[in-house]
Length: 291
Image 1 (cartoon, rainbow, N blue to C red):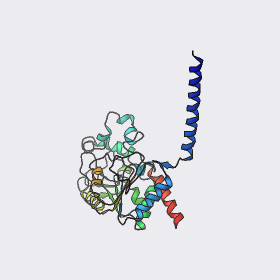
Image 2 (image 1 turned 60 degrees about the vertical axis):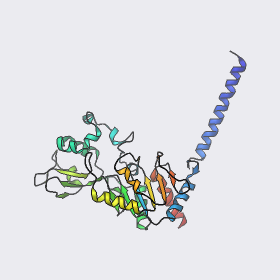
Image 3 (image 1 turned 90 degrees about the horizontal axis):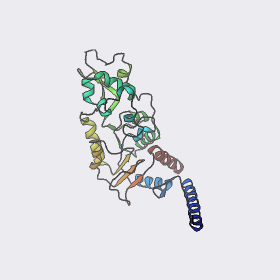
Image 4 (image 1 turned 90 degrees about the vertical axis):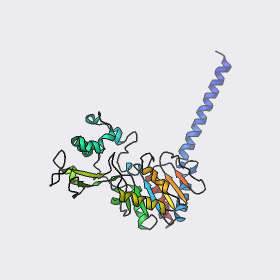
């Protein structure tokens, strides 16, 4: 072996280690750096946008609730990947479909009871900050793809649930309305109303149309907004994801752990690739310091 070559490799390896130590120190020192800007800069820009806005609407998805312990359907650790042995032969989409409810109701309700009970789950900082923004008149509406009711539990009043809610149930025959406990506390494998009809969740299942009233309210709110905050969503669930196309206001704000391929203007818009709860906590802390 050529000693010069060996020495060169050794020197290169040493440089590599030193460079990586420097990179590690830089990452550790700038752990709150996002997309080339420090978190404080991003939060300051977010506050500027909100101060420049009169009609802010929030459009959110599963990522808003994952910090409360609600699994994201499509993430690697989500509901769709928590396979229970008795459900392995079914596609997850089928288990939450109208076909399953009608054709195999015992399978549907067993899955629903095991996986969809969010009654004991509490709101997180994202829910609470949004509720406080509405209370202060800084937020006009929440449009949510989630079905857990956590926005209302946190205090939000104008919430358009475009996929329905697990907190409401009704009879498929007579339409009688039941509370959130009806399915989970029923001793029947398939819960029934006094009229003999099946009690089902007020959730939009696969193969079903979205609720017209919630959709109309959501689209109207987005159309009127001058700032649209998109948070905790992959924008892959349609037709819900298409709703953001109705926005023609001044500012897009995207708060999502993963980058979203949206036509953002760096002068007027903002993207923060961090967990939404973390961002809203930082924003709330900055607001408290200012007041």
